[in-house]
Image 1 (cartoon, rainbow, N blue to C red):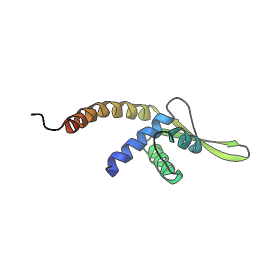
Image 2: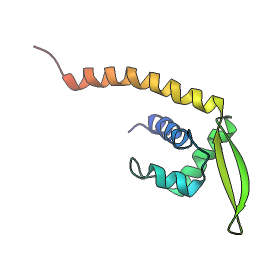
Image 3: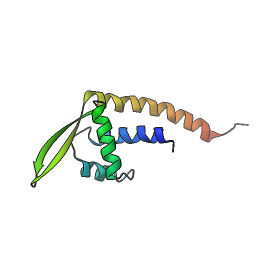
Image 4: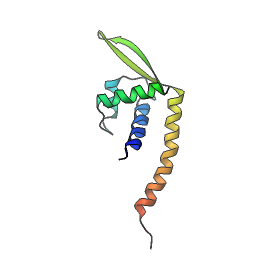
Length: 104
């Protein structure tokens, strides 16, 4: 898969994983595990990029004696999910055209 396309899809997957409730790194990986394989290093790179782009905010709390960062989606992040859904509809049309092949 094209690197830029994959990057965009991963970003939206992470945003979707925290859309309904704030979450932390390990849980995000666990939640996404059924649809894609995501390493911790990749996830934290994505989270940093999303934070820099104001698509999520971070809040640190102490849990079991350790600091845990919770990620919260912003309005910009929610808008990105909606943009992706619109883009996906267009992509499905293109995909269908390509897969259909040449008609006789």
